[in-house]
Structure formats: structure tokens, C-alpha cells
Length: 211
Figure 1 (cartoon, rainbow, N blue to C red):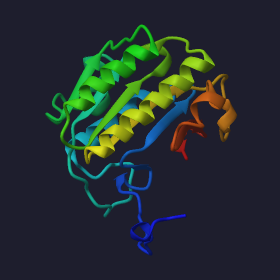
Figure 2: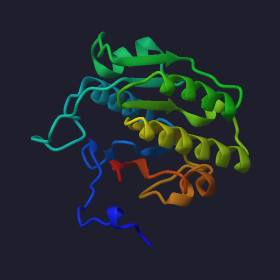
Figure 3: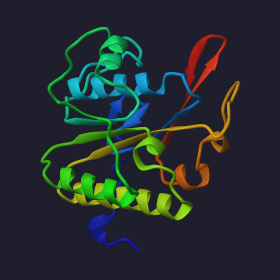
């Protein structure tokens, strides 16, 4: 039963971060086969979100967003790879990239994230590419603790008036052709139930498809 002051007819809608693809405060999983472009996709997202530019993933005429601090933990691309991929040398000064990032355990990742978020006074995005490379092989229990911890950190940030968006890149358990299924994602039962949004990348007739 709601208290009288809690009753409202106002509809609350999510705030777009990358159009309807990613919303502010989401927990997102990006998955796909090897060499399908997951890391390039992650770098593109980091660049768009940190700069506040309208993402090239969105239709022409889409609204831009306020630029925000974006942290890219990257074990997949070095600096030269990133520059070649994006076709330029310089990126937004709001993009902080941690090359060769590594956490011995999921709990170390949570500690690092907690410390960084506790110092923030504005919305921010954290991108981890990729989960296995950064944290190693996680047991179902460790995966559960990781994503429960992520949700708790986000909730604590909300209490301070800021939204933290978290994006993890991961892989399929096998080589997938055609339209992927949720069960194709590594650790699907333990990962996707904690995610608010799952984006799967796949090659179809020499094109990239995402959903």
C-alpha cells in the first residue's frame, strides 16, 4: 500500500544516453563472436558518450547528450589500435582509458569502481572490455556477487543524485551464425539476469547486426 504522498499519475521515463539503445543508468552487456567488432563498438560508445556527440549508431537528427566522464577499461586494444580504428589521434578529454586493465578478482573490480564513483559529482559511464580478460573466469557465485555489487554501487550513486551507466563486453560460448540467442552469451544465466540491456553483435552477409 502506497502512502498518500507516494501516489502519482506522472509517468517516469528513462533518459536516453545513446538513443533508445542505452539509457542513463543502465547495466549493459555487449556480446559477440571473436573479430566481430565488439571492441570497436565499445570505443565508439566511449567516444560518443564522453564527447556528448550524437552517436553514429543513431538515425540522423537524433538529439545529443550532455558529455560525461567515461572510463574505458581496455585489455583488447592498445593506443595505436584505437587511433587506427577511429581514424584520428585525439579524443574527448572526458574519456579516461585504462589500457591493459586487470583485476585479480571481481571484488577488486567492485572496490575500484566504488572508489571512483564515490569521488564523482556528475553522471558517468564505465565500460569494461572484456569481462573475462579483465577479471578472468568467474564462477556463477562470483558473477552473481559482481552484478549485485554493481547494482548496489549504482543505487548509492542515485541516492547522491547521479546516474552511473555500466557496460561490459563479453563473448559467445561458441561461434554463432545468424541471429544470436541469449543462451549463446557466456555465463548467460548469471549475467543477463542482472543486465538491464543486452546488445548482441553478429556478422550477417558481411554486415554487422545488433539488437
